[in-house]
Image 1 (spheres, rainbow, N blue to C red):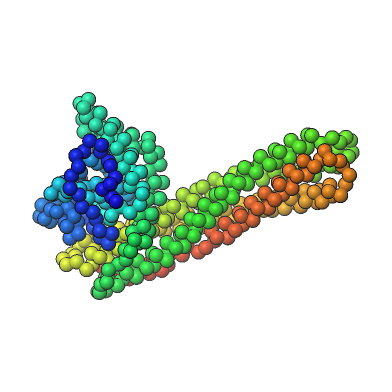
Image 2: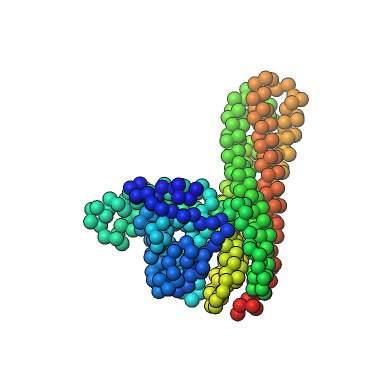
Length: 430
């Protein structure tokens, strides 16, 4: 599937080979992009002997179809200290192309760890279209005599125009790729040894933690929808106000009929302010949940790579580097859990506040609805009664959904098991 993705329209057809779904490979580069470590699987796909790779720039395997803007984005992200992920077409020594989903993680010592797997989702086709458009911009600039660095900047401008929130894209793509690979049958290979067993334990703990985060993500999305629905129900309130104007009643009868609804409409304004605030918190929570899932997916990828590499010969200092990457991943998970707890508390307070604010006006208009149904006010108020009934139902449904989502967010995203497994691995490697 991978090579069916077209990146550069005018690139000649050539040989290609696909990455096996069970293969994970990596390289370590210094701050200038010079390769310092590679593993056996990478050597297999790149088709270079190790001696021809170590000490060489990583662009040794760059494919002509890859736009410079994509690499400019990567360097901007990792030099800012953040992990990067993206789809890349590489070129082996023989000229054969192979596609990968690549992650690049800054290490504490200033080096970069890049881990690669086979692209597994349809997102690669979407990115292929983006790369094509970026290549068009860079190709035109090249033929106008624009220098390489400036061409990459122009390419990045086009990429960011087409994908304005690349961080959000990665937060979706990375977990999706990890999940799709596992659904396709990937699992840790059979192995032995203390390091392998410790890494396998960490992998399983991350699996459990990911299940909790998936539930939290769903709850955050449900909360965002419910709070947005509550905001949009202001239109129902406006419909009630409109029908109030059409009621044909005068004097005390009109006051008696409409006073409860006027109180309710006023309270709805206060409720709407709280609902809007909750909607903003829900959106923030959904983003943090996505970031947490990305951090876990990256940790799972690095853990799988560590387990597999522990079975290779001459592991040396590289296992220590892989562990450093895992520590970075878990730190990001810690941050995500802390933010989740803080935001979940804010959500709970907001939901309870909205629930309390709605109790009195809802009870008031319920009584109004029951009383009005028994009074001979005439047919002209029937549309008003119908609108009020719809408003009551909508409010009840929204409050129920808000409470259900808030309770789900109370799921304990405890990370203790991950920390214990990581400490066990540290004792073996450090």
